[in-house]
Length: 396
Image (cartoon, rainbow, N blue to C red; front, side, top):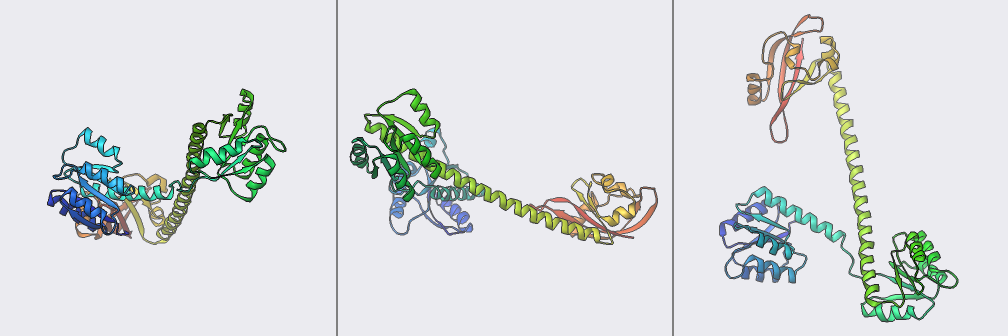
């Protein structure tokens, strides 16, 4: 646990104490206050907090106001709303100001811990995939005055910086030397036209956004541009709002594709990790099965219904059955006595004492022969300590 700092604001001291105990046990650094004014003062002074947990209904300043002011001054802070009086109005209000979650009282400790962990995971992912603050690198390609109009007029007014090339060949040489996120190219140019340039750029970097512009629009040329991978097709004279909106939409798409690639790589990595772990588990399982099968004693396991789940080679040899003939059958099917072997009162005793030993039973072979055996057994538990079966070891 990284020890993230959490501020709790609630006018009920018992809630503050409860949340502090829950979250401190999880490894977080927790501070509490009992009103919104003091909470905001604490948020804005001293060390920054990662998470704010605030009640809605409070005197002096309610949780909705705290959420709004906190987000305005610290957009990155995670805010979790808690309330004993849930309503559609407060849900809408808190959602409008980007609260991460909305928990209702009485609070469930597991739900609180899970909410905080999910919030931190979401922020980590958001930071990894956040669109950079720096503007995109833009190349304007046109042999006409419109290139200067775009780069020195429209784009600079919006805070963008663009380089200029006079034709497709010059643009391609520039592109090979320096990466551009967006290329805005005229359709008709000497040396190399916009479509040929588009094709060459896509060979260099398929994710680069290419916007084709033309003073001679036609359905055929538009179809051709899109068919070759253009992001958009705009007509001259260039409308400033149109080109800026196109760039903004295109840059968002560009980063969405990059983030999608990152996610896919992460998923591939997780898939490979799972496959490797599964392979290791299978290897360990096979090794364990080899040891069990090599044991001279009879070894069987059952499920919670006292049906056979596994049986080793010694048992198969002694009973003269095939494994598939026994698996899934009741444990009593291999014994002659009408005893509750490792189920009912026997199982209760085993769970209570941890094991049983020197348990005399007569095994019945597939041919009806009787073999006296002595058994020991122990319960099998799941991670919640629930009994899921037994393992039994028998000797002749």
